[in-house]
Length: 525
Image 1: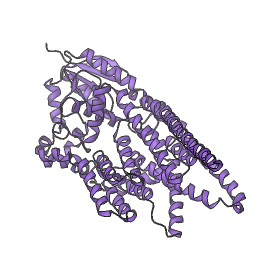
Image 2: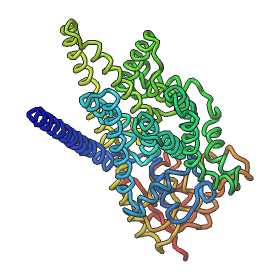
Image 3: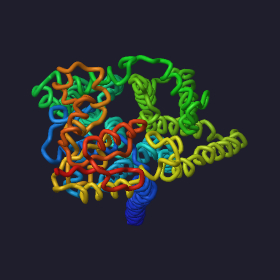
């Protein structure tokens, strides 16, 4: 009788302990979610606008209004992003803040995924907190996952595709992995390089039912990629040129040329030759830790970590486009962080013996110092990307920063509506972001101004086929007053005097000035 009571009390105590542990785990996740939101939501709301955001969000608005990417407007990415952001804006309104908020929420979800995965792999919540802290303070992530671009959506989908294969209780995990990876590829095409890495992991880790898991992965991947067939069948040439061929004319050096630019980018990021002020201490630190982890694995003849393989693949493929930009590397950051956290767990285990007490104390002191050094750049970079604008891509100088704030851009949108003779009036603008919150529309074929800039590298037949606009055609539209409103503002650089003169000669008059943006109107006499 006494033993039964003892067993019952023991069972009850264990049940209570498990329940409390689950509650504390959920409270911790909730607290981390709030902390991540406290970082990424303000960052997304106050970050200076990147020029490409105006294109992506306007394209999402066009899709929301029934247009098709590739066939109605030039769109040099895979098609998922405008549909995701378009659906979001249908539910929560077409605005800059709405689009930015979605990016912030995607970044928060990614941060929580990083925590959960790191804690599960290392069996340590403190190391999970370390991983999410490295993520939350990463300047590459702060700058680019908060923007309404492809990075937050693609990185979340890619990381989820990777993390789900480590589930021990989900027999459909490889179907989900294939599905999520396919959706990531639907956002950024070059993430296709991750497919062989996940397949190798599957073959290496699944000893029973391997063929079934391969089939599930393939089915998930095909299901996610299948909607692309719709765009492909409409016009294969147009689809393939938009998502692939156009990247061969982005520069005179072809798709993968100008190796010197890629070398300069890497040396700039690593601080070896910081010509452009782009040295990223955190990226360098994580690369060094990952290199140390790789050396340790090779010495022990251990298999390559999947996280390290994906990070390396993403870094290499990010160098392929010409020109390449540092922002591309933000996709690799969660995987570098996971691999660095696994290395910390290895060191923890190796220093766990009583004989290593002194070494362990020194190692912890060094780790704290390195963590402080890692965290230090974050507030300075937040200020640079939200206020200063110094060397921020697209903004470049502090003097130009006010023109790229969301409130200033919204003022220009309101001024366009006030000047326009009708709510549906067309507007000539070489940066379409002004039209996101305006009632009117941008002049057709200017939904993506890259089409205008790339047009000199195409024949007249190609310009017509791919819905590009040539410079002579733009001048014709201005001369014939196709659009009653025109904006001389952001992203016009040294062409401002030319277009200002062209508009004046064509009968347009300066109607409003908002900041440095000039809004011209034409009225029939």
